[in-house]
Length: 301
Image (cartoon, rainbow, N blue to C red; front, side):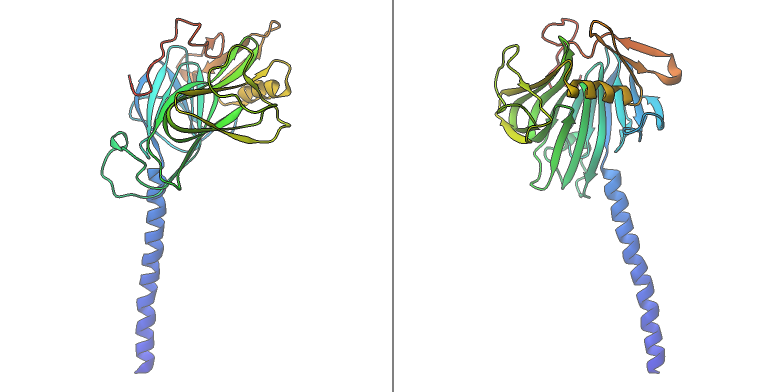
């Protein structure tokens, strides 16, 4: 009789263990599914490379459309005259402008019970970790209030913007034979993490007053105050400048060349949908180019 009792207890433990494993697996799968971004609107033509943000060849290319779900590893390349509005699973919003390249390097979101759709969230509903990379171009965004354990970082070749809950604008532009990173904090908290030859200047900077990126300097973190701006740049001939050009040339869907006079040209591949569209210069400066209409980050239009 004791033996029979012991056998019964063992048979009860086996399904319970399986139940636990299945529950953990379901939670992990649900967490992975939560960690996404949804495309709310698209104008013009934007190419999406799925799961190939880190390699030149591979991944499936398609034309981005409203309703698409983006996941870790996806890259977006926007052609001239295009724009997309994205919302992430933590409620954060991003507007991608024309002639820009943006990758989702890492995205995680713990499960939560809210039934609201992404764009209805007023704050991060659970711990989340988001890392995007702006290879070039411009994005505007609104990161909702984050939990203490959450992060939303945007990496560029000249520095990383650590967003703590704010409306912001970030651009990496090629003008006057140099790359210039500009981060504007409209309200809230933004930290710039970068390496420069001197203490980082925040606030309005005149031409030539930007901070110069120096890969040999120590990494520093500089808070950008509300209504503040910060600039970091690298000039032609600098090894960092050449590394940025090489990085763009290695990006999926992009063909990059530099002419004898220093003009940088980028062509965005449209795969089988009609060849390529030439972009004569990386996102012209919105201040000097009347062809670019700057839209508020709060406007998803």
